[in-house]
Image (tube, rainbow, N blue to C red; front, side, top):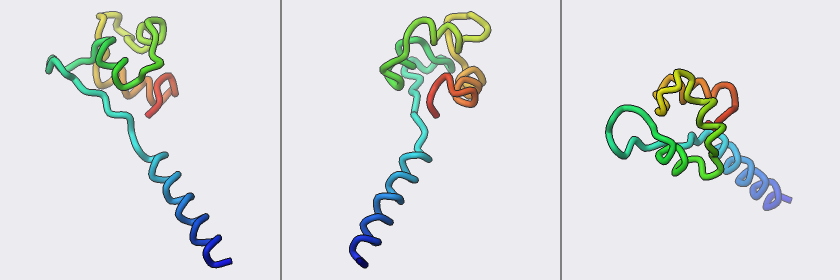
Amino acid sequence: MKKLVLAFGAVMALGATQAMAQTVVSDTDGNGTYSFEELKAAYPDLNEATFTSVDINADGQVDADELQAARETGTLAA
């Protein structure tokens, strides 16, 4: 029984760690914003329509505030 409880606790701890992990988006060209390609590297299922909805000011790039807003609304996973 103790082994079962310990195993369950370990599985639960692993799940909690994964839930707290945040998807890392890299600004590979160093321009301070994220292109479709940079976001696609972090979010492989990203499509143009979702990128456009995240790009609130429609400048073709996603800045840190737009990325945070998309994460808060659930448009992109945290």
